[in-house]
Image (cartoon, rainbow, N blue to C red; front, side):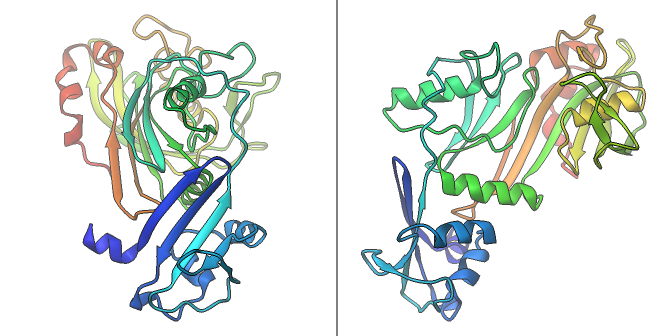
Length: 331
């Protein structure tokens, strides 16, 4: 961590309701840079810098962090640069309800959750008390901490696996910019019907299906660009299905589900695109790998979520694959 500390000389952060304060110690290698240049090198977008400029005492210098400065200010070795960002209002409309989920990782800036099947991420019509947001609200209420729900990535209700949560507004803003720059890497596991090619790339535009608010389809005229890469890890001849490792270049709604149906290998148990529940009672999709650089400390973070039991059952005699998935390197 010594080298990382040189790249990201972050001193400390204080999280209080409605505001975060972060202080950076300026080293010799960063002396002479403007505030804007310094923060841009650390992932701050122009949009976030504009927001800071409009915030009272959003950018300050000094040991007490009370000397307001402009983004054009040149930094000197030994300066203490303080960044203050007002937080969003607490998510008071989300009722704290205890939920069953596993926290893979947590620090003062972010959390990584292993979401179970059947749990929506956000409250919606008919789902006011059974969501991950309700569970996170309960988790923070038990600790007596303010709470604003900020899911960085999305998972469908029946998709299992890794979900990234930002614990405050600055981290959420930085992670959102990283997602836009494709610096948050995610890989998925899915079980598709039939025997797929060993690997492939599906580039097919996706649009909302006519007459539906939920269903999506490939539409060359109205669709938005979408690209999915897949690699077959194993084929189960017993159940005629393929375990796939998938990577997305884009993040369209239902992208994996729609693309696999498009090439004739829909996911098992998918109620919208392949309602065949003989082997799977839900869509067989799992957010397996998540890797990114911590936006505030510079630490390289890599996580994986164990394969759910229903995946192993559907693979029949190929159960050993479930125990050795770490042997398959990310591309």
